[in-house]
Amino acid sequence: MPNKSKQNTFLQWFDSGKALSSNVDFNAIDWLRVIPLIAMHLACLLIFVVGWSPVALWIALFSYLLRMFAITAFYHRYFAHKAFKTSRVCQFLFALLGATATQRGPVWWAAHHRQHHRYADTDKDIHSPRQGFFWSHMGWFMSLKHFKTKTSWVRDLQKFPELRWLDRFDIVVPIAYGLFIYALGEWLHTYHPQLNTNGLQLFVWGYIVSTIVLLHCTLMINSLAHVFGSRRFDTGDDSRNNGLFALISLGEGWHNNHHHYPVSARQGFYWWEIDISYYLLRIMALLGLIWDLQEVPADRLLSKRLPRN
Image (cartoon, rainbow, N blue to C red; front, top):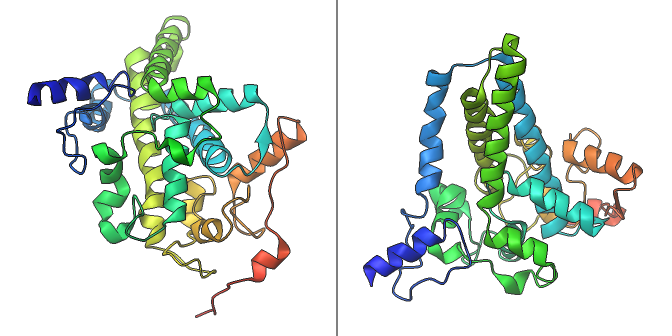
């Protein structure tokens, strides 16, 4: 039976729909299944082997920003909270782009996030810092307990077979993205040698390093944004606003605001609270790609406000 259990977890690297053995410890971290995650962290050290070039750093930055927008604006504000509406085509394209971030599929992501909001910083919260920093930052998704998509939380998304496919085969898109970055580097090496880059260098910086930084900057909202920062609203949890986190995550750092009114497409409630994802969503709305952006009602800006220290 133990061998069968390991076989099943190995198959889940490629097909998350594979059934788990009944004898596994669902609360334990499945180290076999997270081997690719460990390997990607270690692969960041390859920067000392492949070196760097300006084009590699620019590609890494662009890769980070593009995929962070897909995560914050669509995985989070659209799939998890329905903060605006869009077409099925646009929905799929940004689900596809979000999947390149290697943070699993949009349905899985939205289901766990909705559960987090329902039980934020209680015993039923899947990643509260009250359970320890490592658990809130990474441990929760490394355990088998939270591996499966909790379909009862996302019945509205389950009706789209293309989204279910992205969830089930969530490794396919990141692999394709990594190969694209590598191929781009080889093309630049062949036709634009003056840029001093190549496939391996671009892959390490544009996919590996960019993905790991993106992952931790996303996860810090679960962990650090419930510990460091200020509180404007009494939300019944530990969520906090942090301007630095907001810059890094394109607006997600206004986390206390978000927990106060989660369905808002805008998390920086005031003009001085920089929310880059919201600005980009406004541009998309002007272009007709999305519509019905939810704003914060005036009365909600005044309700449950905490006294200033």
